Image 1: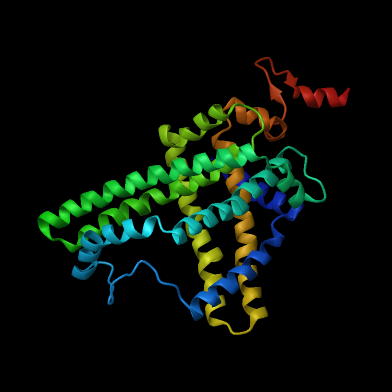
Image 2 (image 1 turned 180 degrees about the vertical axis):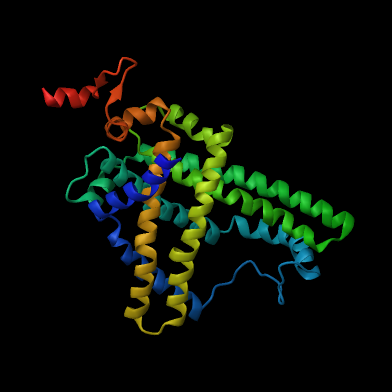
Length: 316
């Protein structure tokens, strides 16, 4: 545990400062600022929540269990929603697959002076396709999970009329959300691995759902990450964008809050991935130099010190 904490804190911060990565995220904040102000001035038409919406109440329960299914079925396959879904996937590639490619090069000691461009040009179409498959799998599992919660809540509402039944699907969705974020994170990190087969990497990815230890440790880590991101990357910048009139002031507040925290969390997430998948041969082969440096010289039962083979060859 001490080793993991040291890796997630001291080592992550050291490498973040060493590579000075993700500083260009300020441009995404500027784009977000423009989008927020456009939406505030001319908000779009959403799914149509009832007036006087309450988290738990008679009107809310009736809307969710009686009206929402029809609205959702009409809304789901509209061109606007399909466009938004495609845009969100492209955004996911920018904020997840590119940093994973960049950090792969960092941990393989391949990163040069132009790390951003090198990470982008290193990506291949089959890696994007693999990531799309993994993301689609996570979304499908989440949809089944939330759908199960919805039908349970609907059954409770239909038989008892309890308005608190709306909390059942909401609670199950909230409980599974950190696992969804873990799936999105692991998908990009496994996608950028060059060794192994398409199916072999997918079997590693499915361990998130089939191995209890990986599941609960990932849930704990990504719950903490979600809380920190919600506060420093979403809430504080959003408040600045909404309530500060001076553009440069709100950009400064948003950048100081979001950029270093987001960069640190991406680095810590990559380190966490390398730890929880450290027993898998495919991952160890991809990052063998990193693991050799982390573990240092190995001793046998007789006390003789053995260096990593590559290191030993370099010394000759």
